[in-house]
Length: 122
Image (cartoon, rainbow, N blue to C red; front, top):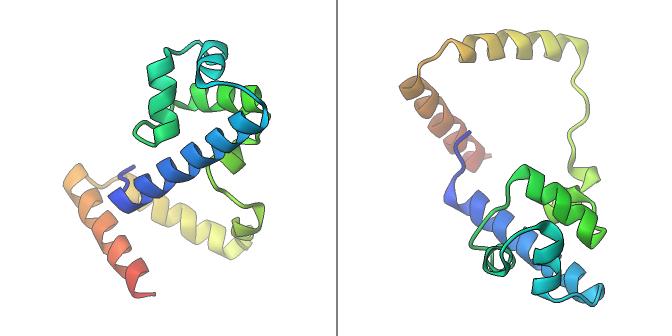
């Protein structure tokens, strides 16, 4: 999945700010958290500075160490989640997904750009 720079920067900022706040609330140092995550302190520091996005496994561990739900670390509000699709939408979505899976890499990039352009116009 291709991320645009704005999405990645927003995710990095949200995760770093939330992790730092949770760490400070817990009275832990970066070194403490890094040790519990089994990471080098510099690597954890880069996560808190927003210059490194953790792997999914590290994100899970971070959630457990800091006692913060992973959706909060990712900035996902449960109210944001879209409603489940209707049965009719599901069949349309499946057909569309099937068609997209058959596209080559260059067509997928083109489709991604088109979707990004349409979203900006909405």
